[in-house]
Amino acid sequence: MAQCSAIDCIKQGTNHCGKCKNRLYCSRECQKKHWPIHKTQCGVKFPTIEIVDIPGKGKGVITKEHIARGTLIISEKPRIIVPDVLSPGGVKEALSQFSEEDLIFFLSFPATESWNIMDRFKHFTPCVGDDKRGLCETICRVNHTCFSPKGAPNASYFWNVNSKEEELRAIQDIREGQEIEVSYMSNASDYRDPLSHLRDNYTFDCSCPGCSRPASERRASAQKMFAYNKWVDDLPRRFGPDNPLSILNDIEEHIVSVCKEGWFGDVGRRAHDAFQLCAYYGDAESAQKWEAICRDSHALFHGEGSEEYKKSAALAADGRKFRAWSQLGRKKLRGPSQQVLNCFYPDV
Ligand SMILES: [Zn+2]
Ligand SMILES: [Zn+2]
Ligand SMILES: [Zn+2]
Image (cartoon, rainbow, N blue to C red):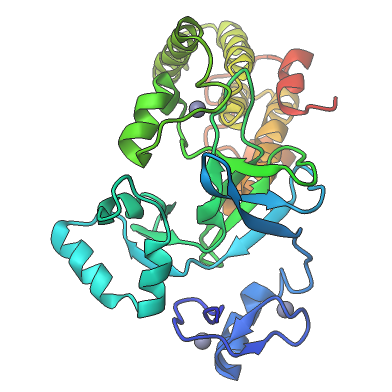
């Protein structure tokens, strides 16, 4: 039996939402309390997906129907929530609070050694901003693949601070029968050495198409990601003293180069850098074109209901709302090139 859908309620759900039957509640009170959040999703039909055994990978999730890029695949309340950082005492404490059913659920996740409890906490997804992490019935069964020139994950997960649910979104079209895959690595810097990062943090040896390349190719990729991260770190210091057009050229060059490495997770962030630059120089037209990419990236990865999307959409509609509008004077810069647009909008 599944848990009540209301935030923070850990009772078992007994009654479905009468309208959509997608949600379970323990009581009328919980259903009423949850309605302001549920009403945006009540009636939304999520694609049919299934947890199955995947040869060589344990369990995984496949889709039973075609899923278009941008679709919300599932929104899920974590079944178990624990503090993000667990001391040995904290682990004991957390385990003692699991119900017997939850303990069986927790132990159904794999570990390198069957007795190793700590390994199993690695399956929890971070719940950003709450200093907690959660174990979801479905989303935590989704396997990892790396962003690489040989392939990329087709989905991405995101913690919705309003609904306190983990959301899984399609960031590429997913064919019927295809496995749904996310990247467990959220930063470009993790891609300097993905194999060691995944071994140290998630205790598995990645055999994705990117990690299966010859060592020389992987080294060349790692070097490019290293150079990219160094450039990102240096970028803020260049605002002001440097020629803004040369910074814009650099931003474009780096967007195109990391996209060749398969890493399109950063296109929105870099487009926002370019927006800021144009906004500092009071170029409204160019600023809005850049921020539109950032806005669309938030829609793809976080959904249109997210604070990130709303903030960006407001700036894309009117760049003059930027806190430092025209602070460095006035100068006509330029919007994104076609090459940059091609990196983010695959069908253009
Ligand atoms: Zn309840
Ligand atoms: Zn409903
Ligand atoms: Zn990999």
